[in-house]
Image (cartoon, rainbow, N blue to C red; front, side):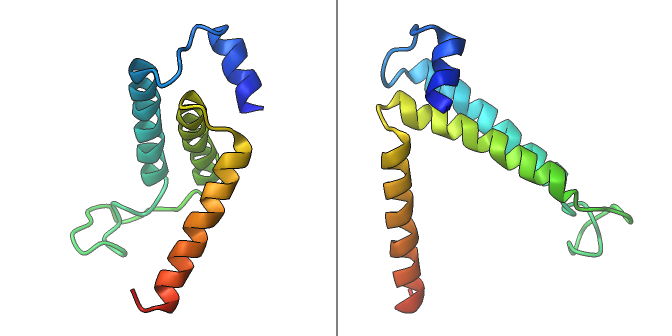
Length: 107
């Protein structure tokens, strides 16, 4: 699905490992991360020692949406460096297994 989206959007104008594209996608991902943070309790004095906001809510549905948006930017970068969904999934599993081993080994 991501490949179809990128092909429709860029009409094969993207070159592999395009630094301008990668930087633009990183800016998009950073913005989505900020939107995730803005939907948490990060300003609340209830949760943060020096928080200044008295009332704050955590908008789970909005956070989920922003995580997906961020993931789409990152997946676009992964595909721009000639990765595909299968490789992403395999590398993700390897990273999870490595991190689980670190936890098991008291890393």
